[in-house]
Length: 539
Image (tube, rainbow, N blue to C red; front, side):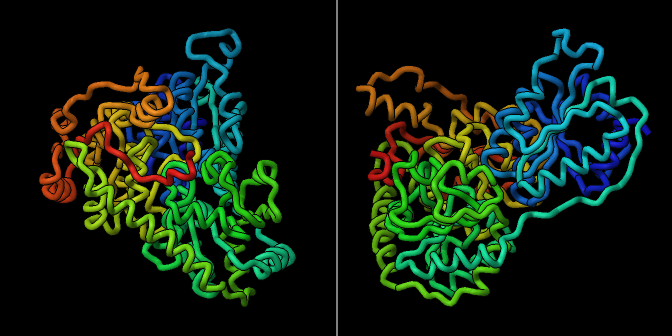
C-alpha cells in the first residue's frame, strides 16, 4: 500500500469514524484513499477554522482525539486558531497537514510557509513525515501523545510522499498518564486537613464521567465546596448543593470568586490557577494552593505550595479513599450567603428593560427547557448569560474557548456535538457567528440538526462597552449591521426565527427545540443591555 492508504488504515484501526476538513492539492491523494474506507465519514467543511474546531469539540466530548485535515500553508494557517484553542484548553485532537513536495521545499514556492515551526508552538508534538515507511507508526504515536497529554498533535506530510510505497503495522496505543504517588497524596492530605476553608477548583482534567463520580464521592464525604473553571463546568452537577458554579473572568459569579479569594486551601483538580481564573492574577486565594494537572509546565507559572504533575481523576480517587476530614459547615454557609446576593442580582437583571428582548429573561427561560443538552459557546459578552443562567448538569456538556479567548468556536462545536448524536445548542454573538456562518451549508448538506442562538446586538459589545466607559464614549470600529439571520438561515436551507420582544421568547424557544433541522434563532437585543458579572473583581 502507499502512504495515503497506510495513514487511512491506521486511522480506521484506531477507531476514528469522522474526519473534518477542506480538500486541497496537497491532500488529494489522502482523500482518494479515504474514499474506500466508508466506516470513516468525511465531513467536507467550508473553512479550516471550522473543521479544526469540530475536531477539537469531538475530542472534548469523547476524550478521544478528533481528527482534522488541512491543505498546505493557507489551510494549515486557517486551522491555527482552532489548534491553539485546543492547546490552551487541553483538548486532544490530531491535525494532519499537507505541504509542498520535497523538491520544492525551501525554494519559496506557492503554498509554502513555515507552518511546521508555527505548529510546534501550539501542539504537544509536531511530526514531519519524511519516510513513507514511518507513516502508520507516526499516526499511532501522535494519538498516544494526544491522549496522554490531552493536547493537539500535528502530523505533516509532503504532497509527493502520499503516493510512495509504505508499510503498515497495527500498534497498540501507549496510554500511561502519570499517577500521583502515595507520598504525594499524603502531602496533599496534610495540607487539606490543616485548613479551615478548603475549596476544590475543578477543571477540564476532572470533567469526565469517571472524574465526576470521583469528585462527587470526595465532596460528599468531606463537605468541601466546589467551584469550577470554564472548562470544568459539568464536572459536578451545578444543581448540587455543594457546587457553586464557575469562577474567574468572563463568567465567574460573586460567590464562586469570593470563595476562591477567601479560601485558605484551594485544591486545583485537573487545572491550574490562570489569568482567567484569577482576573489577571489580581484575585488570588488567601491561603495555600495545591495543583494536580497533566500540564507539567504549569508549575513555572505560579508558586504552588504543592504541585503534582499527575492525572487528576486518579489523584481524586486516592485522596477520597484516604481522607477522613470534614469541613466546618460555617464555611459553606458563608458561600451560600454570597450566592444569595448573586441570585438576587441576576434575578433583577431579568426585569430590566432596554428595549427589544431582555437576554437575561430569555436565557432564564431557555434553561428550563434544555436538560440534557450540550451547550457550546465561543467568546463575547453573550457567554456571561450562558454562565449566569444555564445550569450544566453533566460532564463535558459545556464547550467554550475559555483560555485562548478566540471567537468562532461555538457554532462549529455545536455542529460536531449534534453530529455525535448529542442534543446541542450553540450560543454565539452576532460578531462571532459571522466568522463561521458559511458552514450552515455544511450542517444542511450533512443533515446535522444543530441549534443556534445568535445574541444579536449589532456590535462587538465587549469592546463597545470598554470604549463607552473607559475611552470617554469614543466609539470606533465596534458597531456594525447584520443580515436577518433567520431569513439567511432559510436561504441556506435551514430554519430560523427572529425574537425581538419578550412576548416572543417562549414561542421562539419552542420552535428552536422542536425543529429537526439546523435552526437559527436571531435573538435581537439592545446594545445597552447589561450582562451579569462580578463587578467587584473587574474594577
